[in-house]
Length: 144
Image (cartoon, rainbow, N blue to C red):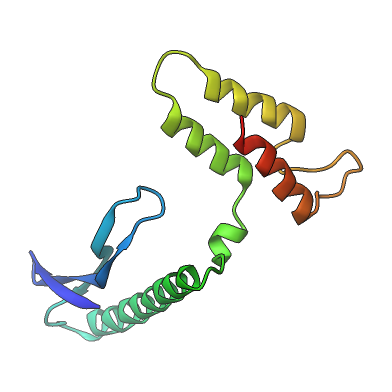
């Protein structure tokens, strides 16, 4: 974690990665990440000092979370954010990436999947489907 000087006597907080890590969303290598958190260079009063303390605590928490995510990926664990994410939302994002023409095959695939399974993958009995069933569905969907 380092500080980068910006305008108006403030500093931006940046996370540096060495070696560069691959962004799971884009697949590109990144050496740093700007947190879009800013602190005052020389706090003028107690409010600015308190603001700086709170922002630094938040930055440390984000840094620790990023370290856990990197270590989880290194050892093959799934991060909490990926595990708790919705497959339907993931499918929509992938469909937007894959759609390259006016043909709406991916969009229709998303709509049919939601019509078949519902947005939250609830089974016909009204209970959520099991993890093994979801993996089986994913394997079938992967071959489409």
